[in-house]
Length: 362
Image 1 (tube, helix red, strand yellow):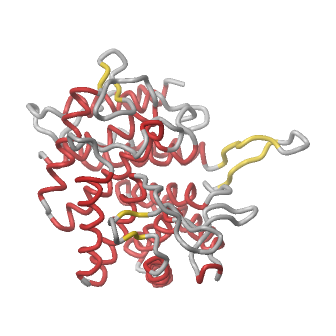
Image 2: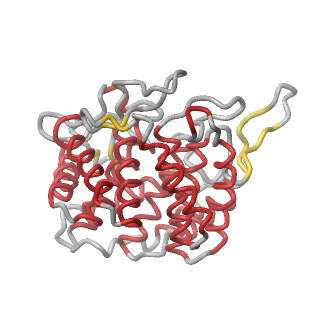
């Protein structure tokens, strides 16, 4: 289990932060811990889970981008090779069942992997990763239906629940495939799905928060606000602005971002959290905050709004001062502390904030 891990870590040194940066040591520690928690047999982070593993891979890719270090390229290839056909269990007769090409029964899971492979292709220049993202996207389109006037479902077999995360990930994958390939079919899907989503009411403009999804009557449910929904939505809106130059999209993205970081999903001290503490450590929720920060950093690049930079740095400072365990060299669930326990997903989620803080203090 350790051979590739050790190889990948031989020269794993950050170059993006200055040597006196408060983030450099913690970024390196968190990344080493993340790599060592991966299962080299299956290629993924088994203790984190399937869709989480796509985000742990994305964090490793982003680390490589920020540091300019290619030592994790073998890990990217290893995940691609080993997890492309992943055993998901057995059927009623006991025969093995596999996910092939990172495709399973959940459209949002698939989109996380597609986005990871787009980023992998960008940094490594390996076309096969981009091709894989295109294969995944073709399956995502099978989730589209005219029910509720459009949009893709969250789950297949049977088709169920049209929600924010699946549709915003679908849109984000479409525009980033278009940016990478200039194939107009991806642009068409992006514009079509964003246009639909903007009419669903899932963007709650009373409080500028993203509602989780729609009920059977196609109306949005209320009071289910998660940090990752806000993050992916602001990235989609920022991409729409960058594509159209229509200021309404970036204004909406900023309203959502500011509501999130000032009064909706933060502690009294301004540290990112979920609505309920149990969500922060749940199997899915543990990953959410890092996803928000990743996309807030993207919004910062589009706007240069100093409030976003200040928020990322403040949260990174809280993580390293209250949520870091020197023994395991990892981060945990609550960014306001105290450290709870070693968790591959929680460590990677917090690591995303440290990586972005490092990038912002080059």
